[in-house]
Length: 491
Image (tube, rainbow, N blue to C red; front, side):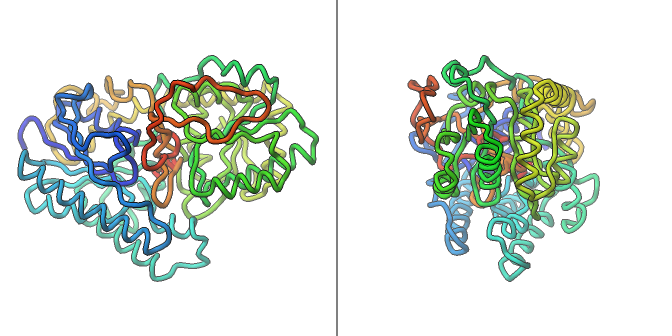
C-alpha cells in the first residue's frame, strides 16, 4: 500500500459534515496523512461535489440525492436499496478515477457491505464502522414481541458486513462483544472507538433569556424516536409538576424526530404546556447555552435490546458540560456514565421522577456528580482519546502507513487536530436521526451545524438569541450530537 493511503468513507444516514462521528474520523485520518473522500447524502443547499482543495479540512466530498426517509419495512427497503445503489456507482467511479485503498462504511444500513465488496474486488480493504445494532434496533423501535423474518434478514445482513470486514470499529465494549460473538471476528480485528465529545465541548455562559425566567431547568438533547424514551420523561415530569407541585420546573427538549408530534400531543394531554419547551433542532452554541442553564440532565431511554447495550451520545454531552445525569439503570449506561449518574429502576417512571427530585433538592450533590462526569470525559472519554484507537485500527489492523499521528496510534495518546473543531452535533449516539435509530446511542448522529429556528415557542418569555442562524436543515438530525449517536446508535 502506498505511503499516502486513499480512504473512502461511506455514510448513508446523515449528511456530511453533519454526521459528527464520520466528520471527526475523516479529519483524524486526514491529519494522519491519508487522502480522504466521503460519500454522503446531499442536504438542502449543499454542493454535489466539493474537491479536497476547496475545503478547510482537506476532505473531498461526493453527494447523492437523499432518498425519502423510510417508513415501515418497504419504506426502509426502498431507502436503503436506492442509497446503496447510488453509493455503489459513486464509489466505483471514485475507485476507477483515483483509487481506493480502504473503504470505511458506517452503518446503518447494513447493506453497505455490497459497496465494500465491489471495491474489495479492486484491492481495497474494508473497515466496518459498527454504529448501530440493526436487529436490536428493529426489535426496540417496532416493539416486536419476538424475532421474525425481518429480524433474521437483518441478522443476515449484519453477518455479511462482519464477514467481509478486514477490521471492525465498535462504539463500545458491548458492541465489541457482538462483533466477537455473532460476528465471529478475532480480537485483533476489533477496535473500540467511542463517540466522546471533544475536550473543548464544555459549558458556556447560560442563555440569559432562559436564566432570567428563574425556572428550575432539566435538560434533554437528542433524537426523539419511539425508542428514545422522551414519553417516559414527560410522564415523570407530570409526576413532578402535578404530583409534587414543582411549579417552577421547565423541561427543555432539544432535538426532533418522528415521535415529536406524538410527544407534543402527550404534553398537552398531561397538562404540561407551561413546563415543556420543544426547541426543535438548534445550533451547537445555542444548545450548549440552554443546557448550561440546567440543574441536571435526563437520559430517559427505556430498557430494551438496543438501549441496554448502547452508549447514548446525550449522556457523554451532559458529562462534558459538567451536568449530573439521571437515567434508567441500563448496563452500558452505568458502565459509561459511572459515578456521574443517578439511576432509576429500569422502566419505572415514578422512580425516574424520584431520582430527579432527589437531585433537584440537593444542588450540591448534583454539582458533584457533574464534576465527576466532566473529569471522566477529560481523562478518558473525550474524542481526543479515541483518535489513537482509530489510527491503530488502520496501522495495526490494516497495515496502513500513517504520517502525522502515527505516534499517537502506537502510544494511544490523543492525536492533534481531530475533533478540535466545535461539535456540529447528533444525537445521539448517536444517532441521528438515523433512519431506524439515532442513538444518541451509538448513533449518534446529532445536532446539525445547520440549524433551524425553534419549532415551538418557549413557555413564558424565553427568547434564545437564534435569529441569525442558518436555516438550512440536513435530511435527518443525528442525535442532535454526535455524537452525535444513540449516541453507536449512537454508542
